[in-house]
Length: 224
View (cartoon, helix red, strand yellow):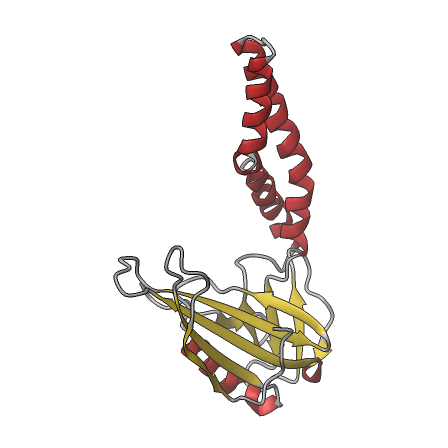
């Protein structure tokens, strides 16, 4: 599978760092709201243990199957209805991309959410970017493959924006691209890699097999 390219040309000679697809105009409000509402349908599934407990209690006290089914449906509907506004709001307020201008040598940036972009800010308000790459390797005899997770932290003048890029985003390529774009503007971009071994069942916590390696180590702490 090809590596994802989060840096893309934006409108009016800008460069976008795409954190999540969509956003940037009022035309996206409806589809993103519908996406949030659709996610709420999964809430009853995630809270299935609560619903199952209520259903079992109802059966124990003598409710018939039809009554239990109605109870389950009502509980699922209430759970979805309560979750829908929260999930819709999350979709509409999530920062979906960072937009930089000019495209090749940025001096300012803005956040882009579902609807219109936010105001332009000087690039100095982006105090640093930290890429944290965690690789978890199998213990001897473990048949499961190694896994990795990439977390990117943006220091926006004291406010932290956290982003987990989807696979298969390469930490090294993303670090190189961000450094090339923002390094000349004085934005520190740090790559920190940590290698650990997966915990063997029944043997407590895992051990750190390789410590961490840092590129451009003058970056900010990022709160983590």
